[in-house]
Amino acid sequence: MTMRTAGLIAVMLVTALSVAFVAFAEEPTGWRGEIVPCAWITGIEGTVTVDGQEVKFEKSAGDLLDFVEFAAGLSGGVQYNRWVMRAQFDGFSLDTDNVDVEDRPEAGRLQSDIFLTEVAAGYQIGGWKEGQTLDLLVGLRALHVQNDLEEYGVGSFSKDSTLIDPLVGIRGSVPILPSKIRGLRFVGLAAIGGGGDSQLIYELQPQLEYQITDMFAARAGYRRVGWQLESDENGDELDFSLAGLIFGVAINF
Image (cartoon, rainbow, N blue to C red; front, side, top):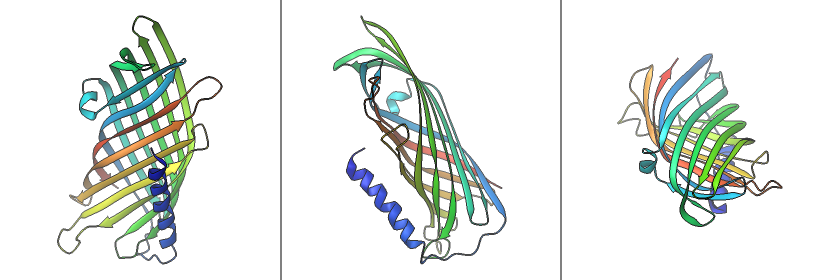
């Protein structure tokens, strides 16, 4: 992620905080919530150092369909009055051959198990028009990665890493053409953080939602999640992102 992109996310967060002072909305009362099973058709790109061996990779979502051994995702949230809590869990098991090792193309095979957990809590405010909401969130992201690298003609290397970082974010919900299309909304999330085990973490997740019934809603959009971790005394480096289309069905309660 470039500094320009990081700056854009920061501007979005500051803008969201500024509208809090002029926001209005119908006061939500009581408990409500949702559970969202989702499919994230993601690609992966970046660099990772495994026991001193730098591995470069760039695989599109189409490429990864050949290498994914397991993938699952689940998100959800609960709300009491204006207080909100949200969580998202993702797991991937990848077996990717022909990766670049130490600038040598197609010099190795990388097997990775990736588990991503995000939890956040915050306060919901109204937007500048009726039906709009904005959640101001503070939370944590935990990433666990098990990498097993086979460098052809050299040997095998393994690295097990867990990164935990704080983050702040906004999650907005805005009706689209409410007078013409009932139940269609834009739902977007932007978050940025770091300062724990990573120098920088970020996330962008714009989605469209269509309310099918009071209980079920369909969602489709895009999600990008990234990390930057500079070299430490052990030579560990991490600079990679997961990005691709995401689809889900929200079950409201």
